[in-house]
Length: 508
Image (cartoon, rainbow, N blue to C red; front, side, top):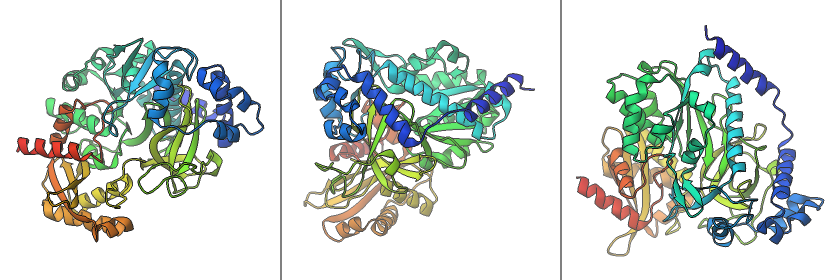
């Protein structure tokens, strides 16, 4: 009998039952007050009169009036760049760490400050996620099993006066000592910088572990599990880890990979989604039978929401000069919002670049619906990431092939005609490229009116190339983007797409 597991499960259920929570509005007002008080004496707080904001009757309204909306480049160039050298710029003290973003939407990785307060925030959200496991039908011995977290290397790089790496690597490097009892692959393997070498080490050690839960980006976790199954000649991963019950996804949409994951399992497992970005841990799935994520409203992050429509953005996804900004208690279900955050790492009214949609207002559950800049709109097609994801899902269903990854770009031929070039990656099976292009084009015409208009005018055609998904990952490696938190960009710049097509030709 799992005595320790029963005790831990009971403690989790009890802790969850007695967790206190105000209304979303009150939670967020309290969070903003704490953030403003803590940063009041910083250079940013002094410049934007945090002391005066705190004295206002409606601090949220005055906060909106006094502090401008910024993107990464504005915040970095004006403030964060100084924070690498000097203390008390946007948050008290000086960060010991800066997180390098995966750089899917820009040419270079961004440096995001990671304060001790932010590390504490991530830990408390993680604990809240653990408490939510009381909502799942998990056996007591699950709470005695180990957790395999596949992230970036915890071997951080010294830069100026701080250390830097991807956020998952920073978290792993700062994990408390007691976590070593449960955490796999352990500090030594987690510090291996080379992705393939790390996966090889994990596969070799895998039989020594008793894994109950796995966390990580789907594309790389899938590769790791396939490597383990292949190395030990298994039928399924449950042959090695019979008590694996939970996979916590994040970073990219899970659905394109779910069929491939299910093929590796001997029995159903619980899937969770998580919203952990370089800027903070924002939400997590807290109950079964949904991939909606409950927002973390009490953990040092203040949220605002900009409608992702004509109230907030123009047709190219650019923020309006005076956008509508919605507080937490006024959001509507099934409507896309660009997420605006202020955090305990010194991000203030920071447009993170993601769009979210509330699927359950009462539970404050969201899904990530896309990116503000993941638009294919060279000739007015206005394709969002959501529409592209649905188109690829439809293509896979029509052709009976699991499509794990894709990328698209707007290219121009020698006659000056614009066309959309798609590259899709599959685990197995092949696609008739011409038929695939017709199916995808037909679906997008019906799903998006602007796309249909563009196809009848300036957008001359659609081209599609299918390759084994490993070819796309090999290309990412040539760009020094492989493993950990690295994501394949859905919308590529024309020059990057041409590089990918040339790489595919070389691969044959």
